[in-house]
Image (cartoon, rainbow over all chains, first blue to last red; front, side):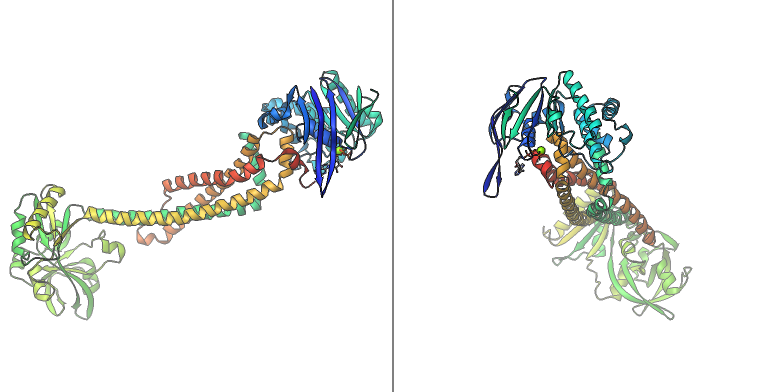
Length: 223
Length: 394
Ligand SMILES: Nc1ncnc2c1ncn2[C@@H]1O[C@H](COP(=O)(O)OP(=O)(O)OP(=O)(O)O)[C@@H](O)[C@H]1O
Ligand SMILES: [Mg+2]
């Protein structure tokens, strides 16, 4: 479903150029569980943003479900982001004015889900990340790990077929990490595609396939 | 839609003081519009009411150039026989000094004939009006109004008293009810008025001669016929020169009045409109700040699936809600203000109430302002690329 061919993303920093991604070619099939590991600044988040239709490559081709990303209209992209993709950001990206529950509810509102149905889905998602008690708290009143779990709940509440996690367990203790990884494995077992960014070798190994990234260049591990 | 309304209300409530400041421009604009226009139309209402009260069943003719064929009392009597014309009464008018015992005051003296009473719908309280014999014999009799009686003589039961007007003694033979509805009564307090026979006025004042320059005409059947008949008589008399005279009806007076006031309304309305537009610019300004402040939030919303349309709707809704809220507050304050003004000027017998059509215009205008001045900021928000918005300010 995801097909990247020679994708590059170049940032102009001062007078020099930084290749966040350098001719990346990557194919991910429907239902795969892929983890991406690499040092800080190697281009992992950039790759994720491009896959998640938030950023656009400077060169190369990105085929999503066989269709080049440029061929999607702005509103089709919005539809993909809202129906197909669940994104867990490295920096959580919660809306600070909204409570945990409202943050999780937001994607459902954009999907046009009815109120009572939203309530049950939100309760379910919060339950899964063990945050039911904190539903009415603002993100600023939550710890980093709790915020991260809100972000995960928000990503899974719509039951997307593609889940992108940018270090979703970076701030969690090992017990919660195990629980979250459990959720991801479960989603994977249900046939969803999962791409996970992590620093942690151990976590990466729970995926069925590991991709290494360094200085914007990809290499498969154990291929 | 309902969701974006909720979000808009939430965001407005989240920053009450700023929202209030933003709305202030609209509030003031709406108040200016509603209060000014309501005041003008309240004043106009009472003036036109009085004009209408004067009766629209008389013509006023003014002769500016008699071409050597002056209109005399005799002419008027002849014309009264013509078809379509009812009564005709001359009205010479001077301002004189009236004295009674120790008192003296300025009085408006009308010289006229018996027909005047009927044509102008005067109502007698005591005594009689001028009679034909008074006119024939130029007797020194006067019919005065209530104000004249109370201010000059001191009491109203004054028939038979002698009042001196510019040194000539007149016997009071009748007392008229004060004309509450007259234009002079509307614009000033009741004035002192005396009616004397036209022929007596000719003797009293050098300005008035047997050549009548102003007279009023009532209709036999309807005003239009009377006007046509009068016009053809005057044209005949003055060598077909329609510049020699003017015929005016109350309708024309009303027309003139209402065109003055509608111009005034438009003028004041547009000044108030400008302040509304300024208020709208204030909204746009704040909305731009809001959009910048919330760039990251916009990025997050887009990243989790908000389409351009949804974002546009959200911010547009916010600016429309801001301006409509300002509008409502403004209308409410205007209403309160008009109530206060009405109480303060209640002695003027004018009533000022909220003009509902102006309120509707204000509401519509605010809505348009909310949309127009919200569109640019909202569009700016909607067009943000998600990744740039996400990275904004960390
Ligand atoms: N907006 C930007 N402007 C300029 N350079 C950028 C921008 N975003 C990323 N970069 C550069 O691109 C490179 C890759 O960044 P990216 O965020 O993808 O790294 P990462 O692998 O996610 O790192 P980390 O593990 O620390 O999150 C970095 O060298 C970074 O400096
Ligand atoms: Mg990163």
